[in-house]
Length: 102
Image 1: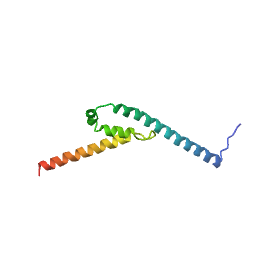
Image 2: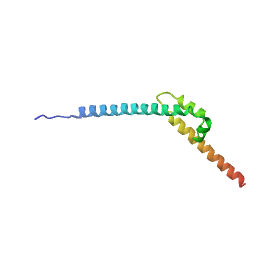
Image 3: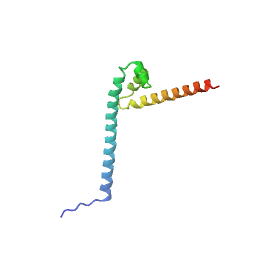
Image 4: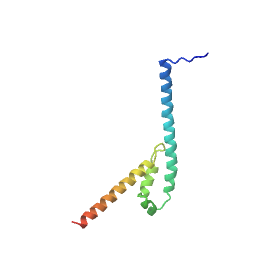
């Protein structure tokens, strides 16, 4: 009969190795996602300004996102730019509404 003895030192080592593998796996999957999103955004670079405007973006937003370092996900910049656009559009509507009733 074989028995396997686990002491606290080997258990600690195993948990450290598992944590390191999880960290590496997370970084690799994040990098793969960033590359995938970069390819998708690269297709947006060929879109005309009117189409981008319908999405709440400008050509400058797309260029800025693609200028990010390779390991960063450029989609986060586009989401931020779109949120800024929505916020400013909502504020402009509010200001126009207030102006009509003043």
